[in-house]
Every structure is written in structure tokens, then in C-alpha cells.
Image 1 (tube, helix red, strand yellow):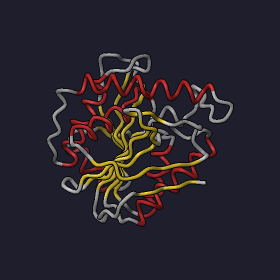
Image 2 (cartoon, helix red, strand yellow; image 1 turned 120 degrees about the horizontal axis):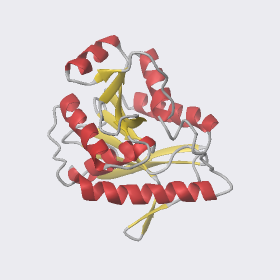
Image 3 (cartoon, rainbow, N blue to C red; image 1 turned 90 degrees about the vertical axis):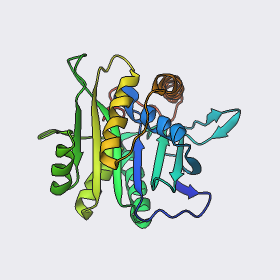
Length: 243
């Protein structure tokens, strides 16, 4: 069962959707969480499913779903903040398809995913991007994001992009090179600066260090707990965790 629920009626047609599931470097959760707080976005809904580990996130003494939607009418944005990922490889397809069908039904204009890819050079943190259409790929290259060329993508964002490519919907995967051994706020800073270019925004990243540390601790704890449960074990090598 997958439940996608919005608490209130909001106008999503033409909006841009951003997501960042936990993965290498925790680039996605750090970036999304910072944007939620910096832009003061409104909590408008959640995703709940038995395909996720049986966990609840506690914020300010309040239990909340680990996957939450945040909305900005002013910036025409819908963000999905994910503190947990699918509990198995098989469930990735079901969850990805459910999210994609929801976005398509709401007539979302553009989809952007944020994640990290390992680098062997700890001093080199380039930004790569994969786009669902040739026209979009050319556009993002002009903005300074490097194309992947040849490779393999995995996880929720990859399945969503595959569907978007089939339907000719704009979808961009931002991939920040990271040192897989450490979590660094610079990764989220690089991702958000790329988003500023893509969306013609000016999100200040000066306070990102503090926010990123809080997100890192929270997500690490949830991932640890998910590994400790009988259901919802996420192996270290699961491609869902390392997109």
C-alpha cells in the first residue's frame, strides 16, 4: 500500500518538483531540508507505505512521516523531504511509479532530483547532470553542469526519470561528486548553487553548515534504526542508497 496525501488543496499545475532521497553524501536530504527552512515552505502532505521501514520521525516532540511534502506558492515549488528510503530493491519501482503518477496527475512542469556520486579525488567536487530530453540536456550544459555521457543510474530518481523520458516531461538529475567516507555541507551548497542557476533563484547558503549537521545526524539515526528492524533492512550496497 502506498498513500500519497495532501492536507489542503494547492495549485500544483506548472510547479517544479524537487526530491532527494538518502544516498551517497546525503546530498539530497541536506539540500531539500535547507531549502524548506530557508524558504519557509509549508508542510502540506506526506507519503506513507509499508514499503518503507516501520519508522516515525520525531520533530519538536511531534511524530511525523519520514517522507513529507513542502510547498511554496510564491516560488511555484513542491519539495519532497525524505529521511528514509524504500526497504527493498523491488519496492523502488512501486514507490517511484506512485510518485511519478502523482506528479503527472497534478501536471507538474519539471522534476529535479538531487543526489551524490562517489569521486576518487577528495578535492574535486564537480556537478554532473542527466536530463530526460536532448533539449534540456543542452540547456543545462550551458549553465555549467557536466553531462554524464555514458553510465548507469539507480534508485527512485532513476525510475522517475525513465518514466519522464518516455512521456517527454522535463526531468533533471543533479549529481554532486562526493567523498563517500564523509558528509560535508559543501555538497549541499554545490547542489543548491546549481539549483539557483536552473531555477533562476537566489537561495543564500551562508547558514547551511549548521542545518546540514542537524539533517546528517537525523538521517543517519533513521538509517541505523531501519537496519536494526526485522523489516526494512537497507544493505550498505543497495543501489537505492547510492544513486
